[in-house]
Amino acid sequence: MNILAAYEADISKHTAEQTQRVRMVWESIPAQLAKENKKFIYGAVRKGARAKDFEIAIQWLIDAGLVHKVERTRDVKVPLKFYADIDAFKLYLLDIGLLGALTQTPSDQILIGDNVFSEYKGAFTENFVLQQLKTLVNLPIYYYSKDNSTQEVDFIAQAGSKILPIEVKAEDNVKAKSLAAFITHDFASYHLKGIRFSMLGFREQDWMENVPLYAARAYVKDFGTKTHFFSKKK
Image (cartoon, rainbow, N blue to C red; front, side, top):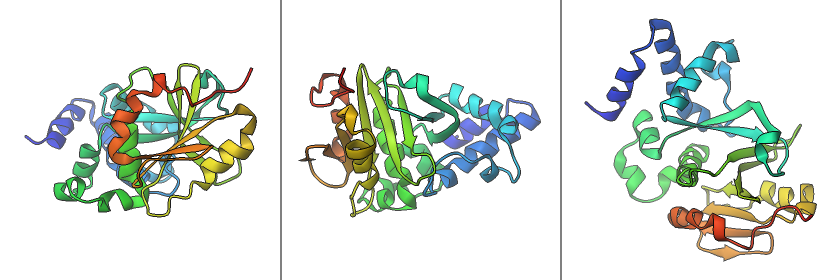
């Protein structure tokens, strides 16, 4: 039995109605992540659907450890949980292996080269970075989007008293306009320094540090000890 069949068997233990709803959410996630705006849209699961129709299904997937829910934060103060917008969130899969299996992506495309990371609006890349971030058990992770704007920061992590804005870039064009505006304009008084994960090598600027994707796992392990990230001055 392959891994997807095993998960399908677990899902089918519910009532027929809930089984169908869990499957609908589960199967919608790749398409949700392939959008420019990866915010979870109930209408993309079923036309006209609302939160109450799929809340139980989503929670089951979270409790089963198959998906990660990343909520929007309205502000970047510690603790981030106070500023969570629970109605706006993204759903990511447990790992990119599952994402590849669900999308029937050939394994060699994931393991060899970087094409898969630059396709699908960066779905694999964002999921990969979140997968590394989630290795730190006590790291609250949110995302930020500005009201009435397309400006968005992929992840906002809270490492102790530090706020870490994180941008993920899959394409060759790595200009992080949203991250730059977030740090140098919108929240300039917070004296934050951003992290950008991309295909490029290590590079440091005053407001941002670029980290190559291959080093993501090792890099996030040291979040708690990095002294060059700052929270708002007292």
